[in-house]
Length: 63
Image 1 (cartoon, one colour):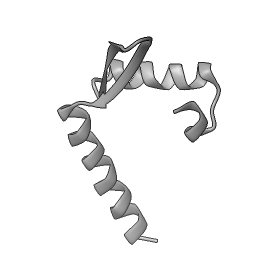
Image 2 (tube, helix red, strand yellow):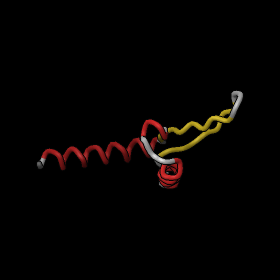
Image 3 (cartoon, helix red, strand yellow):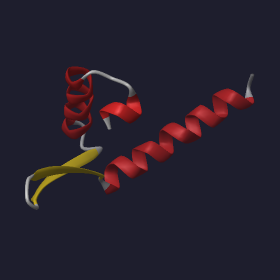
C-alpha cells in the first residue's frame, strides 16, 4: 500500500488507524510463513464510501 499510495510508513499508519477507528475498515493478521496484515472495507465503510461518492458527483455536476 505504501508504494502504491507513495506515502511514508507513519502517514499510512495514521490514516489506516483513523479509518479503523471510524469503522470504515477492519484488519486481520494471517501467518504464512510470516505475519501478513490484510485490510478490508466493512459494510459500514462501503455505505459511507457510497455517500461520499454521491456527494462528490453532486459537487462536480455543479461546476
